[in-house]
Length: 123
Image 1 (tube, rainbow, N blue to C red):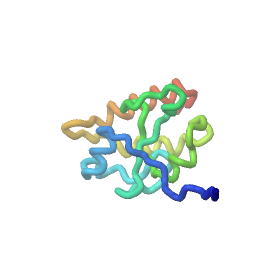
Image 2: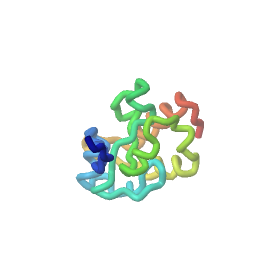
Image 3: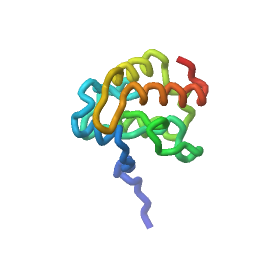
Image 4: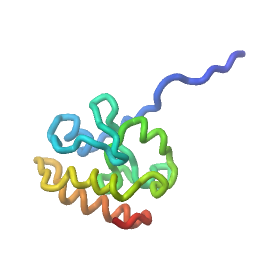
């Protein structure tokens, strides 16, 4: 029997209003992901601040946009090893004043900051 590595990319199939609104072009000011990576329709994914494998929920306060590549590189490692304050602040600033029928950027910013504080990142 011959064993070969799997060449397929992992699935990042989570759906959430954040990703949906971005994909529909309703968050026009948001160009970069949580790690500073340029987002495209083909690469955008939802990243859990606290990994689902470590009890993190798939809720807006625990989700950020990131490229699939950066999401995969982090895996379920501690967010403190990957988040730098300048990049995180730049990510959050993209949401200031953004409001759609289903999404409030200012509320989102507050909820992400609260989650980051719980995870040991103070901005």
